[in-house]
Image 1 (cartoon, one colour):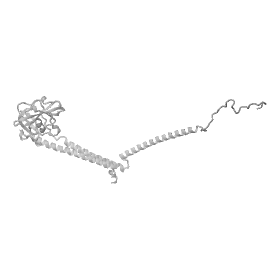
Image 2 (spheres, one colour):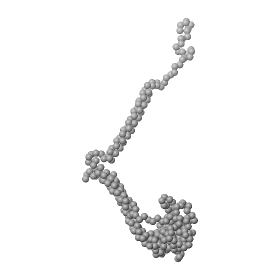
Image 3 (cartoon, one colour):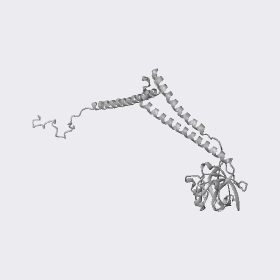
Image 4 (cartoon, one colour):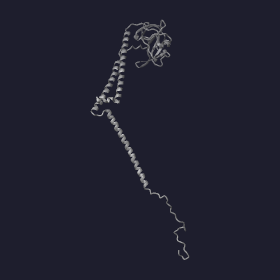
Length: 323
């Protein structure tokens, strides 16, 4: 066990903490994907059950001021009334097969005055430029419709501005158009026994389990890979230490130490070269100073005596002619 003491070093403890956090994150993400898989299976079960049931009057499933329940999703209902085209709401940013478009929601006013929000279908158009007047109009007069019940969307995307929204919510559209509405809305299946004219029908949900199972396994595999990597590196460190061979980290440290020593040696060589140059220059300066003769401090200039003032001139001859 002594050979595994390196696991208690600061470097390996921090490494183990990072791997632990990574493993927990991958485990949580895998669990999240499996929970989504369970929700998907439950939703598919409800959809399959409701799709096989016959249509019932809308009042049996929906009511004003009460949203549709999750168990009522994709339940087929029927209603009779008159479309109010003036209160058409455009649902923007709906794409199909890479094409931009909008959904067209028109309130169907029933006999008691309560409106049922009907998503009549999708049409390809500019998301920013589409107006209710530019869209295919609904049938005039009394219409019998059948459609699948959907629950209201939530969040900021449900806000209605100038008969335009990004997600359908009866709680937002009702006050915006000033009408009492049933909770939830319906995706149109048919009106008077026919699909909506000039609009693409609703896309029914795909009743499969999606990619959640494989995504969950993928996240767990990443966690196991992190554990395997940690164990392998620890084993490699232990193996190299037993054989007396330097580990990868030791080799890196040794290489860095060698580079540092080489760098220091270069610096010392440069300093020595500068020192030698300085000494040589100083010696040359001292040599030049010694080659100059010293000064006496008082040197009288050579002068010539004026004529007749020289002390070496001959004395004036006397009368005898002798000097």
